[in-house]
Length: 280
Image 1 (cartoon, rainbow, N blue to C red):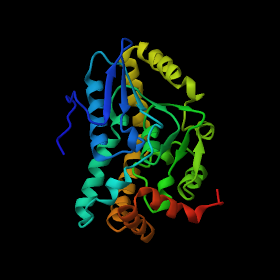
Image 2: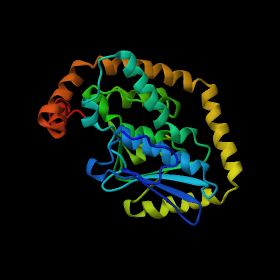
Image 3: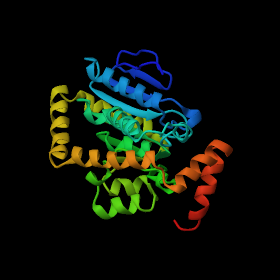
Image 4: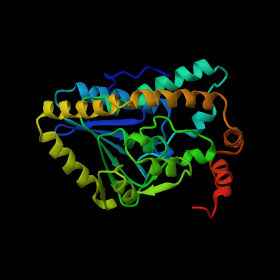
């Protein structure tokens, strides 16, 4: 894969645009895959975020999704083909990916997630470390991948909700509505599907008109509050567990990966979901 740098001006899976209000619009652009996150898209998103963070003509960054949904999660087709022969290499792979994927948390300018229809798995996690999330009322969110034996990745969730809510999501793999997510503090605003663009633009414009350095100071201060409470230590510990689980998949995920390779992702999903029918 060719290296993707902040100076990249041509993207394969990302659209980069800056408007007159100093808002940078980063659009996940794999609509045929429901904007599922592969390594290329994660690298391009990081490059776009760093480029916008360094741009004096940008005050606020928005991440949105093209097509039918915001992001359906991790690219399970790519995941099934990953090399798991060395736990040390696989661990390094996960830590590198974590560093790239959590870029919205680390850039100094505010980041808004503008979410519609689905934010599952990595799509859900992406919204968690953005600073503001605006979601449509028909959005489903959660860690559905745990039902297939796939772990989460960044695990900011316990820092944003109470323990019972975190356990209810992670130990069942259930999905939340946008209204539930707002009630739990995971979504900032819920709007009707047809109003998402206007609501996002209004919020982004308001934030972009505040003094830029005041915004940056407060974002970095608020992030530091959570980091001083142990966020980085906790996520590092979770990543160690993820590396072990990734290199030694549970039987259910091994079966899921085998079926994905042989019969396709849809067949694998239908087979895995059959055992949960009627239980939600």
